[in-house]
Length: 293
Image 1: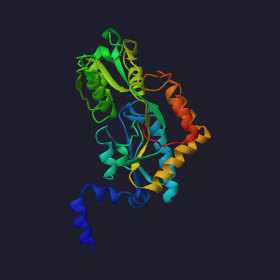
Image 2 (image 1 turned 120 degrees about the vertical axis):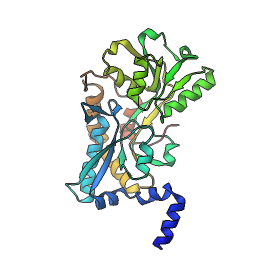
Image 3 (image 1 turned 90 degrees about the vertical axis):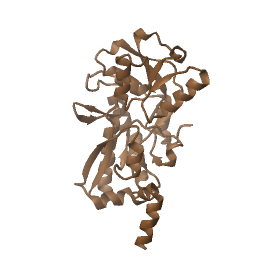
Image 4 (image 1 turned 90 degrees about the horizontal axis):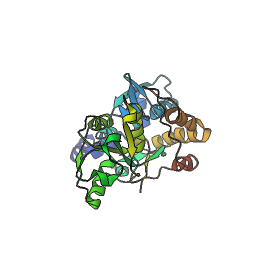
């Protein structure tokens, strides 16, 4: 039977890998550790400050890890961390390298075919970060120009479609992460960086000369962020939802939001001054994991 299963898995490839790691709590209990993902430049959710992981979803991940320790009966369970990018976050979750990804990942139906999402913890939309001297105020001003958009993001799909629909003929370059996307604008390799507005405000706040930049144009869409868990693992999703939902009901989530969006944050101790959106306020009561339209 084992031989037949091995042959079957060899023929199905990643499908069997995902199945093998689907029961996250059993995997964690057996291995003696859980591996959490973090991003290196998704301010203020998950990023590095002097080599240290910080951010709102880093703290959410730590709270989830504490709940996992109780669930598996291992108070000294080792917590490991793995850096991920927009391109590799889903493959690393599916193949068992990481067990949870909480950051700036959009919850949509396409990704929902590969992973499951917890309760939505933020709502955002694609806008543009530009130099104030660029003269760019809206999407029409980008016609025929170079725009940076991080590879592997939903923003790339949205901007490509918008460019085609409006005949903007954008020259899109695809940096590996958000920090590199902002660098393209700083070094005039791109006139704009198209990304989720919250990440743009975070990058701008931490810039050497934040007054040189601005976030412009209306949001092209509204999308929710949510933590990712492996597909078809209802027990672990229930645990993650329980932690996030509990934080939202108790007021702990609102305090965490205030800390990272309204108070000074590292490394420059500049506040983002982004009040909670109506969509997020609504979800504190609804606790929805509904994907983007």
